[in-house]
Amino acid sequence: MIIALEIGLLYAVMAIGVYLTYRVLDFPDLTVDGSFTTGAATTAVLILGGVPIWLSVLGGLFAGVVAGIVTGVLHVWANINPLLAGILTQIALYSINLRIMGKANLPLLRAETLFTPLRENGLLGTWVSIAIFAGVAALVGVLIYLFLGTQYGVALRATGDNELMARAQGINTGGTKIVGLALSNGLVALCGSLIAQYQGFADISMGIGLIVAGLASVIVGQAIFGMTAVWQAVLAAALGSVIYRGIIQLALNAGLNPNDMKLISAVLVVLALTVPKLSPLKRWRQQRIREKAVAEGGAV
Amino acid sequence: MLEARSITKRFFPGTINERTALDSLSLKLEEGDFVTIIGSNGAGKSTLLNVISGRYPIDEGAIVIDGKDVSKVPEHRRATQVARVFQDPMAGTAPHLTIEENLSIAFDRGKRRGLSLAVTNRKREEYREALAKLDLGLEHRLAMRVGMLSGGQRQALSLLMAAHERPSILLLDEHTAALDPSRAELITRLTGELISEHNLTALMVTHNMHQAIELGNRLVMMHEGKVVLEVDEEAKKTVTAEALLAEFAKIKGAQLSDRTMLD
Image 1 (cartoon, each protein chain N blue to C red):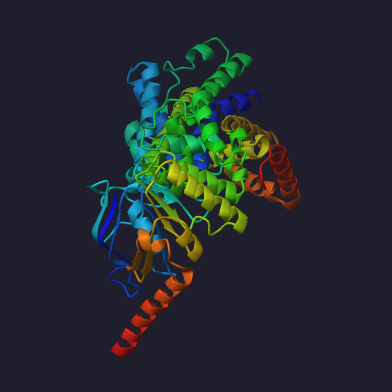
Image 2: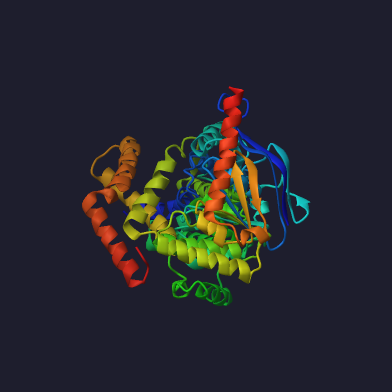
């Protein structure tokens, strides 16, 4: 289970990225499956080419930013539907990722990575690595939370919340969407870069179906921990990732095949989207919202 | 201040559904003018506001604001000069953002939106002061999400957000029509107060004949994409709803009989 916790914390970086597009921008971005691998591939190639580790990680992040910009431009300038724009970039990235790597799998086992010191000292899979990974996830979460409270961050949130109003208030909503997608895919690629180093290889298929894992984390986390305040929503996305990996681990422990995991992920997302809407739960929640509103003196 | 020079807007051009929403319409507003617009459904009133704000491009003519042709300027860049309040009370604010965040968006209109904090304590003071003038108690609820407010409260907030940065022109698109009578009255009163406080130039579309007569210094009647009647400041002081209705019937009747003759 400690491994699931480790992986969950690493993937929290991706969940926060998916939160930015899916919730903040209201843009279900399927670029993720491609940009995750792009981040992993870029970092792997750079590390194997002798580039310093930190620069290699930044290179992976930057490659994801570019992928996000491509999806954004396809949507904003070419006026392509968000889902389709994401799928097009994702498919194009499959070929690009193969070009970057030169083959379908790049082992990193002998190379020095960010995780080498942990591995050599036998700290992976211990509370030390958990604390470090939690620190990384927290740092990313805090940075994103702070960004969403800036003038530009609020403009970005308004774009996803009420685009008509955002434009009427002088916000270049095309620009905020592209920036949001760039930032989100940068985080996703950073996560890909970390995972490749953690598992010791980059693989062409490592991103397949990841958007569902990201959505599951965001939706499950926010269904459990709420998303009223921004800090709450960011925290919920990160914790959702840990919960999601925990559920996957439980399913594996119960004897399910790793090949069944995509099916379980999809079912999990469907449940997280539908269960909170069941009538008894919904009534309970509305009652709470009403009480809160009355307590704060708002009209309902 | 605002000048529409024989602007034409066609929807679905070149198709069987082609419709001319604005037909070489010209209109000029001087600084401080508050013009009310009346007219039947489909007269092109809302389209006029939408082309002035840049939401729709125009096909012919020019829109000039503060002496500058803005016909090709995109919507979000026109927003520094043109502010709007929509008919739908939900349209003018972002529901999942707090009152103070919504205000920060409006108060930063026309400024560069950078990486400094959107809401600071100093700004909160400014927001409280502005909200207190609405007299709705919103100044005590800065951190509340706007989605929790009633339609009337949201529309009052929209109005404040539109008027505050002192736009060159304020567009009001039947902004009281979706509210119950007492709320509508409140918003109407606030509209008058904000316009005179900031000395704004405004263009208001309304279905309510009495509102059109009571508010503003000029009145315009539209029909089939054209201005068919202008009531100037002097005449507006004495004009009655009955007189306007009679005038409208005459214009409509004249056009009907023209058509009958053509057939």
